[in-house]
Image (cartoon, rainbow, N blue to C red; front, side, top):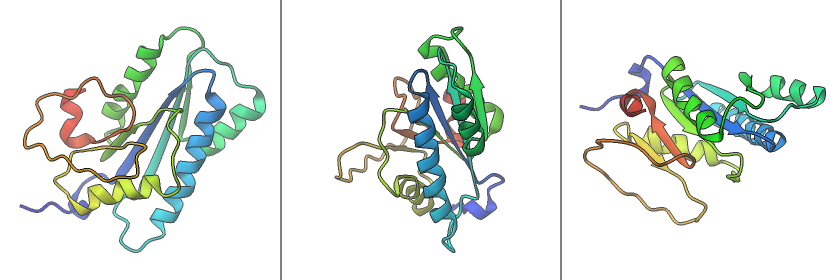
Length: 172
């Protein structure tokens, strides 16, 4: 049975970016994502309708200009001061995905450099194959596709992995 995105209840894409002292770089990532999604959404066959960007900041207090820029680009910015360890900040992304229930969830590291069109390319993979549940990105230009028939668990992967949330959220 083929499932079309138009029949899906949700066509949101959530990108969660955990960061700390690299906050400025995280906001740069968010800006690149916004620009890419704008180009993507202007295509007539774009199936994903909304990009939600959440940046979670640990152990860093941005100055006023940085905080204002973040508010203008991101849908949500969470400040935790020094109360979280890195793993907790990362785990928070899965909880936000469970709360927001997007169609697609990408936990993106601040350190992963995005090429122009990266988000569009990832989304097109999900559009081309509606049964696709996970896309693993990498910095190499080669395309490799590994097809798994059954996924029993998803663990040990933080960045570079994009999930079809509705099918994999049970493993978070």
